[in-house]
Image (cartoon, rainbow, N blue to C red; front, side):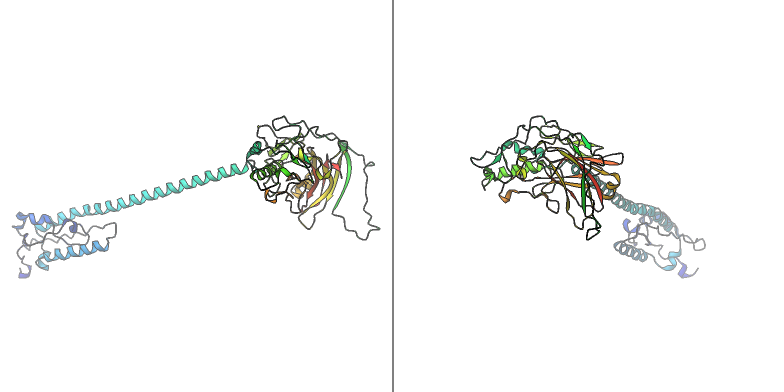
Length: 472
């Protein structure tokens, strides 16, 4: 046995620097376990070189998480300290009971290190998972809230729109406009808001025979052009009018007469402004939803039936329009209609059935029909199914409309009141507001104050039948 193979001092336990337990657990460090310093009996009995076995090399445990730079630094320090405790390279190759014990202790300590590292990683993973779950719950909660908000918005959007002074013109009930000492005005109506609505219905129609229809042939032989006119019409029958026997209003006291200023609402005083606001709100309340004006967008109804009842929704799913007393609203002849356009429709004026054919125009305006809708009376509009499909429906104006379809109305800041503020009613005849029978769509329109009847331009030629108005 050479001297180099001779064990030197058998690695005295006292001279070896103890390695901290935390360092002993780090991967890659060759350490002498603390348990080797206590194994004095094994240290007294060194193993002869002939009996030396191949040293057991314990590979460092593979730690799941990558050690940080701080861990690497500690590992290197531990490795350095461990190597200083070895007497020589040759001595390190000798496996003594102490080294076996050290190996055993170190090897047994490795799983603990792995468990500790995995435990820390697991805690971090749990925290990450917990945060992820919280985020998912938060996102789900926000999504549910948004969906609920959208649904509520859609429901509110489908409800009848309010006018400027709240539901059903209710806020106007506290305002009574005094009659002027001098001047012309319309007094309050015969019926008050609490009274039952007057019975009204569409009258009986009588159609002319072909021989009775007055025809105006287009003279293309003597004419200078062969281009068809944009509008033509003919009267094809008569209808019994259902003339209202009484007038009615929403209870403001007095109303302006067409062409005369109502002096008791003119001025900058708060009560005068409030009176003008009340008149504007009431006139807006009488309009169908969609009647464009500077003071609102109509009074919460869309279509009307043959008995003058007002509705929202569709003809398939009707929703009755209610007044402030929860009564089903109905068209009536308003007090402000008296003297409108400097005259009144005679009660014995015959109702007519007129057929009009209107071709597309090159601008977005409307066509005259030669039909006047008396106040509070029901007008029937009919159009074929093919024309309904071609046009998408008709927009009917009754009263004063600008070329763009907006009402020629009076607003508060204008400081005037020489007629009822809004005298336009716009109603749509389409598949939702009309009923289909035998290939013909039928709808009903009307106005509380009356006026000339116009039909807005469409993108296709159509023929419509207007029944119940008078000729003008």
